[in-house]
Image 1 (cartoon, rainbow, N blue to C red):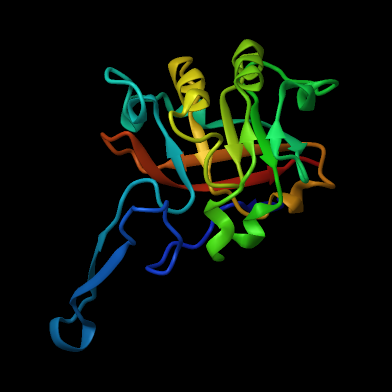
Image 2: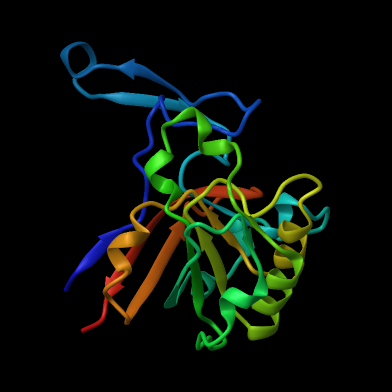
Length: 206
């Protein structure tokens, strides 16, 4: 079985959305003194590879813990959007999408993940594209950049109002380019919150 890890490592030096605090790691106990190691982490929930739930933008929206786990697993559909500043509905033309699919937009920006420009001048998904994804019945949208849109976040709202979670800051989508058949498994920590860190993998189907 071939597995491709699509998750960025999580540490105190990962980039965060401008204005958000960086994650903080603290050691509470060490093996040499206590006989075991105990650590603590303080972080915003939108750092690193993570999943946005409806509660991120909607007052009565579901938390991550409320989303059925089946929503986080599905047939993967990779769409190459490199060199596109605007990801419009035309990128879906000719793409076979089935209800329950996990659509991945590969922009190539994960290579800039730890560079200052990562959060600036990234591509944006249009509202028309978001509505087309909802109409197709996709289970999730995954992106290898920081956000599908910018304030006031209309694309977030279109997707989340339809119950479509958003996986942000994916890594290594290029490794899927030569694999037409794969399954996405994107499991967030089951937090009663508007987002959660996730370990996202692709299982290659021969």
